[in-house]
Length: 104
Image (cartoon, rainbow, N blue to C red):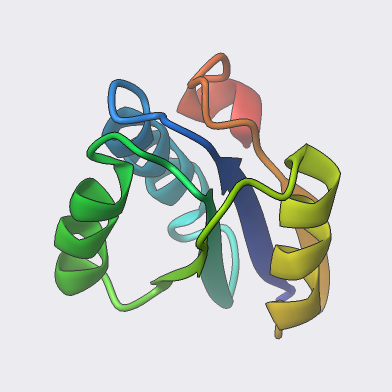
């Protein structure tokens, strides 16, 4: 069975991050032998970092990397990709545009 890293670039996404992470975890649970979700907080000034702390405390498969100032979408994706430890790596947008069925 394959393993998967999911990279999620995030900038000021307090309204989306919790639901997005819930959908990602629900989509990959049971489909992969092992998985990780790497959220790159790209210098958010809202509650994104606080929400991420709560989520990582509840699920050790969610990891975060934080930029002190925004580096941009591509730089955030690349930073997360460099941390990826699994066989496959995919990016998911944090706007929660895709439900778990679509993500599967």
